[in-house]
Length: 237
Image 1 (cartoon, one colour):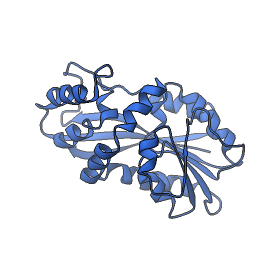
Image 2 (tube, one colour):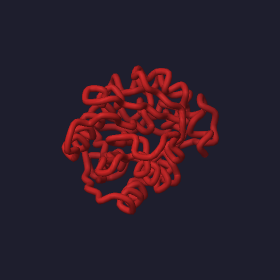
Image 3 (tube, rainbow, N blue to C red):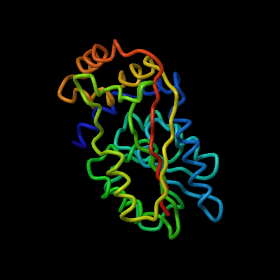
């Protein structure tokens, strides 16, 4: 599965940035996660591990307060990341020694591993004593009537790990707080999000990139009206 995730994200930087330019969603998540993490530190944040950093939306935010180390499985995503310190690697098996970071953040990434408990244990290992960990995981796209967008459709949008699994993994290692962030959005934003090859792969993982994007476009073409996108946040100390 990890090879498939890497390949999917290797194909995704341009479409990912197009969605971000349209919505600013990941910048907002990064800002809010930054506020949570910084509020739980007793001093300045020095070195931050941005685990699953992607193209650097979250890395740039944490560069305002310290030194982010951007780690991602995808070389193509990292090549688009502008921060100085970039490492290609798997957050299930971090290539760092113990007690190296003042904070660890998983901005929209921890749910991309089928075994989030392994990544959480690794985060604990590389954190300095008392350092916080922050994460966000998707809860879905909701219609005005409260129904999940995908419920009446022929496909489910399913991440490798659910938000519940992410929360359980964090709670097994850290004392955690959690809550939900909701964002008003549109059907067009939903469709744009799913033109990202890695996101379309959640719906049609066995199809080629072009085929899965086309099938996803057909699946979502009749979705209308205002929507809400929900994310669950977690903070562990």
